[in-house]
Image 1 (cartoon, rainbow, N blue to C red):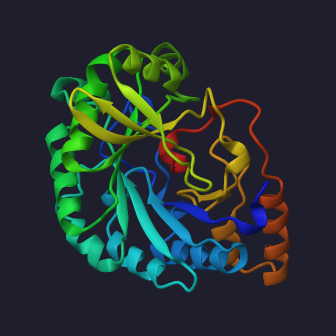
Image 2: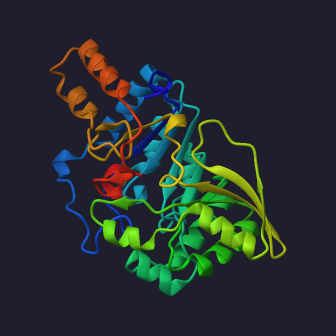
Image 3: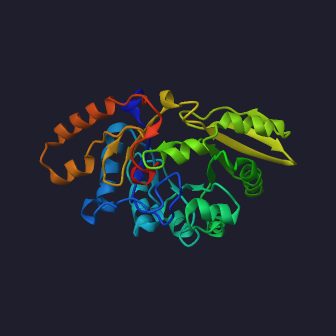
Length: 322
């Protein structure tokens, strides 16, 4: 890893389960779920976070899934992680469908902010893309998160070639109305849905060109350190909004990556694209190796972080915790 010794961000997948079946994340029939016995307890995951924080300087924790809010006990997990020495911020990425009833409890537990995935405001397209989801639940979740103080809230929107012209204007208007940042993300293909993703792919640059041709004024903003999104201010049709652009396929941000991942099995991952994983929770659980041996093995694993050869995910996004 270019910055392995000082990794700052850890994404923790607390579950591989999700209540939606988004086409770019998993097949329509779902994916084989981990046996219950292979899923670490939330206490084990929190201990692994503390272990990594003390050794790699991890100070920002992102709780992910699957959908993290389908697992019971997540607010208590957030509270435990927020109390780890050195951890400055705990945030969450969620599909938003279960956020409304949980927002206040999460905020009280120490959750700082949320990123909410929302690719379209059209109820029919949302239902088709998620295979049964209700966009109204996501909008209620966004409102509840804002009321609970889970800010700055960001909307994550995956771009699709077939519908971005219809979806982007409404999403920009929503972000402007709510006073939140929206981030447009290039579609990456996974091992399960590669053909669909390739057919639907559109680059961030192409969408920006379309916006400019439609009269939008797009102004670059200063970059945040080690953040994957290229920030812009968009003025269009009487609205002004901050939009980030995450273009992992056409514009890799690997050189500035400071992220590690802990997947739903409790395995440490250097990269979303790297199918090799280090069984951290399992090693800590079994106690067969001395602490120093686990540290040495983990250090060697993390030090091998390199930019991927191809921007292709061999596993499903739900199992990794994208």
